[in-house]
Every structure is written in C-alpha cells, then in structure tokens.
Image 1: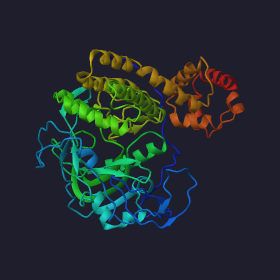
Image 2: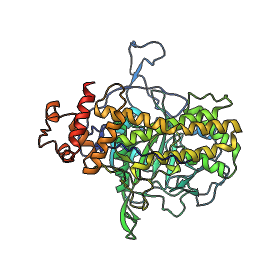
Image 3: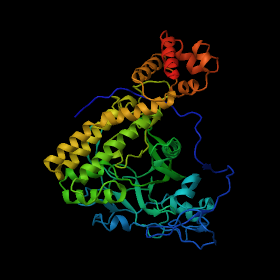
Image 4: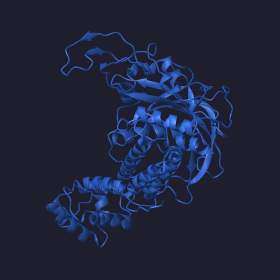
Length: 510
C-alpha cells in the first residue's frame, strides 16, 4: 500500500534551552539528593541517610538517600532479557550468519590509547541512572563508559535484526558496533537499557570496524538531548569519551578516506527493539521465536495491550501505527530530517533512535535531504510521513504469518488510518505554532498558504514563527515589519503575503 502524503511542516532549532549538559572544563551546579528504590533489576544500593514523613499518599518511598557516589554498588541486570529470549550458542566473536536467537553474547573491545571524557549529560546521570555527577570523574566510570570495565550484573549482548534499507531487503544487519550492557531500574521504577556505541566488533559487524568517530558521536550526543528538550520521544546519551585510536572514514562518501579519532557513547532507551527485530524472524520463518519476542515486548513496553488477548498482535500494531504517526508529525514540527529511515532504524516504541546523517532544515524546503548518500532523496524531509507508511507496511508483513485472515484484515484497516492520525497531530502542532485556538474550516488552507510563501521565498522556517509570535498585531496589519524581524521581511517580499496576513489576522479575531 502506498499512500502519498505531502503537507510538510518543519522548523529549525534556535534559541533552544538544552538540558543540563556538562562539557568538561565548565563549572557545574551542585547535585541534589534524590530518592532511591532498589529493585530486582540493576539498581543503586545505598544506606538511608534520613527519614521524613512523605506528603504523598501511601505507595511512595519515604526514604531519602543521596545519589550513588561510586559504581561499587551500582548494578545492571540482563536477566529480564536472557530469561525469555534465546542467545546464540556460538560464543566466539566473529562475523557470521546467526539464526534462531535474539542476541549474541559479545564483549566490548577496549580502546587502545588513552581515553578522555568529553561530555556527560548531568540530567541523564542524575534522573535516569541515579549517579552523582562526581562519579563521572572517576577511573571506574571512564572504564565503564568506554567498554573497558563490565559492571556487576552485566552480560554484554549484540542484538540480531534485519531491515529494509532504502526500500530493499538487506538481510541480517544487527548491532555491528554496539553492545547492550543490561537493564537499570531507577528510583522511579523505570527500566532503562544501556548501550555502548562504537565499542568494537560483534558477529553483526559485516565489513565494519566496530568503531564510531568523535564527529558523529558529538552529533548524536547533542541531538538526542536537544530532541528530549523539544519533548520529542528519543533515546538519550549519558556520556561521550574519545581516544587517539585511528579510525578511517569516508565522511562525504566521495572516496576520500581520512583519519579520525575513535569515540564511544553510552546511550540509554526504554528499549532498542526496532521493526527489523521482527522482520528478520519472519523472513527466516522463525515464527515461534517471533511470537516469543512479541509477547516479551508487549509485556514489557505496551501496558495498554493485554498479553492474554487473542488479538494482542493486532492491538500492538495499532499502537505502533498511532505512535509512529505522532512521532513523525513531531519530527516535522521541528524541521528534523532523520536521514536514514530504514526499518532497522525505526523503533517499535516509536522513539527517535540511531542518529546518523540527520539534519535540521533552515530555509523551508520540502526537498531538504541531510544525507549526502541519499542521491534519490528517498528520505527527504517532505517524504518522511510516506516512509512511515512504508515501514509500517513492512512491520505488518512481518506480523502476517502469525495472524489469522480476520486479524490481517483488521491490521490492514488500521494501517489505512495512518494518514488521518498523522494529519490530525500535524495540524494540532502547526496550529499551536500559529497561536490558533478552536477549530475553523479554513485552518488547513491558512497553514498551506503560509508554507507556500515560505517555500517560494526560502524563508527561515523557525524564525518565521518565532517572529510572528513577537511582532505586534498593528505592525503586521500595516505591514510595518521592523528590520530585526529578518525572516518576516524575507517572506513579506512575496506579492501574496498581504493576503495571507489579512486571512491570519481575521482568523485570530475569531
């Protein structure tokens, strides 16, 4: 099924208040005390410092404790994954075809040269991992986040998955330079999976060297934290380390290979399962394992879906379709182009993962392509909603072997509802940027009219909306646009801008 969607809505990050990122050499604020809840999963086990009466109802922890000051009693757990999901029986770490499993055990390969900590996210360390910022200054932490040291409870794993890349089935892919260290349950009872990227070869490395470079690692660190601040579901990055190890890369895919520095990021997400996690099982006819993995994912991450329900896979698909539509609408609302929207990069939890050649659009252009290797513009920003349909259709194809005829029909109908879900959220976001309240029949036309003017004048998308929120109504009505509103001045050069302003002001009065 191919339904074309063209109603791009984009903007660029400017003036963004980033979360508390600490670049080393910059003085940081003090760390506050937080509540801790040790549990069955990996956790921080600390002595209680004091007890105060809680202002909350029963069921909340009343014990106050400091954040963990070291990694000595801080643990991860791989048991929740390994108790249910099978592991490759071959223990040797060499590139190969792997079947009938979800993971392969693979230990990170330490960097050879001196490792330095470049940056940490204070927010991720404190609020997700229950670690005091001072822990990041210890040798144990550097060794942990660079892959040299394995903490208690961790069994490093590489995930097996496949995927469609640029529309073509690519076969076995998998974590070729990433290691899943385990699950951590924090004081809020949230489970987070910790993964190193750039930490060495695995059975899924294919022709790769298992490494990441500083350039791309900095981009992933900054963008994941920026997306979180923009309230867009995303993986997070806790830390970034760099070494003097030589890593050779063709940055612009033009045959010019240059030497770069090896780096490792520690990133966290509620889950790293993606559409390709299911595709590879269906492709090789591993249907019992497909059911096992789906039931695990539903039980762990989809509380609205009843695991014992016969239609659970249809219900699961319905949630993924809805949340994927929501996610892509959010991407468009900030002008984010993922760059590589392959099925192996699309999270089943509908969060933004695998930051590669992404980009934020500046001048409004639906054909904006951040990926220099995307010669045909398949993943241009204006086509992301259509790619969402393509990827969800591949997910449906992976589910079809375990659905009965009626369930397949229901799932197909759910997918047909994707455009409405996408446009509904898209419209809500765009109306909010224009300050429009309520529902009026002409709102879609008003939005499309403005986008047309932006495209024709190459107006800066983000600053156009920013300045619309700052200019006075009288200035706009009289087309007396101050010089500092440069984005509006640019779009005002279009002969139809006065007509749009009249329609906009009339709509605001309503």
